[in-house]
Image 1: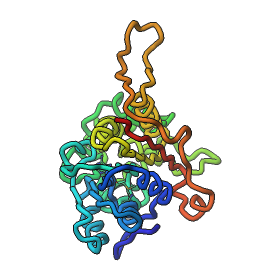
Image 2: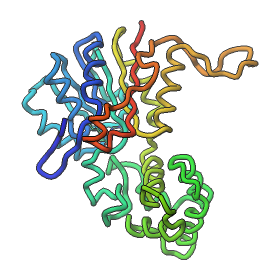
Image 3: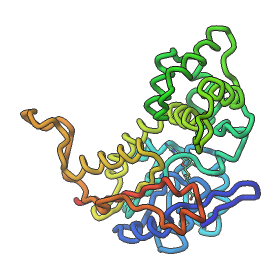
Length: 312
Ligand SMILES: C[S@@+](CC[C@H](N)C(=O)[O-])C[C@H]1O[C@@H](n2cnc3c(N)ncnc32)[C@H](O)[C@@H]1O
């Protein structure tokens, strides 16, 4: 399914598969925790009798999705909030399903002014919520060389993190902090070069890592999953689409813990990881997009969908 406004489009990933899980949930309301341009919400509103509450921390996405979904009247409500605050942001009860389609939308990537992409010149911002937190430029200017290296290594799995961090720290020390996407992309390219056979731009991992850090994406995801389960009815379903291994690992481990699987070291006298049997896992292995979807929407290639059902 393709969502669009006059300027922007976003192809909804794993739409039928998500809808199938939503249909299995017991209740009258679905929460779309990552509304974006409203592709999944539209499919739920058109394909079920459920009401939908759509959350997004990006005010621009909320505006576009509201326009797109206006025809569903009071069956749809949009909330401009971080999904880490799902407990407070959603006042509705009788929740059949919560869905999340993580990361940034094509709309955000394609809007050069947001600074998410190394392909377009823009101020180095990368905040999904433009009203809170610090920009990517501020993060790089105020972090130490070691902190920058850790961000690049852990969030971007960038093996040459130390070298890039050293170059960024040298810029800071010279009183020339990076201000634009172009400056960062060119610094990375000069620092590590392009390896023969590299399919991606040398700055791809750096940009991903900094975006994750700026938006605290992994920390918020860890807060979100148990809070989403608390919102669900007994028999309600949580479905999460992730786009890289760090996110998928967090989703997988959180589901395991919530299904009662203890992850404490074997010698501990009692469980400290908080495992508690609250859900049953519906996806032993993650669901991947079909070959046809991957071909038609290359961005879907890294998507993984996991779902679980609340027990009591
Ligand atoms: C991949 S897009 C969702 C696309 C949508 N499913 C569609 O098909 O049109 C992800 C959206 O989630 C939002 N988002 C990401 N992290 C968020 C968070 N922690 N809280 C609220 N919104 C978030 C982003 O701003 C973005 O608009």
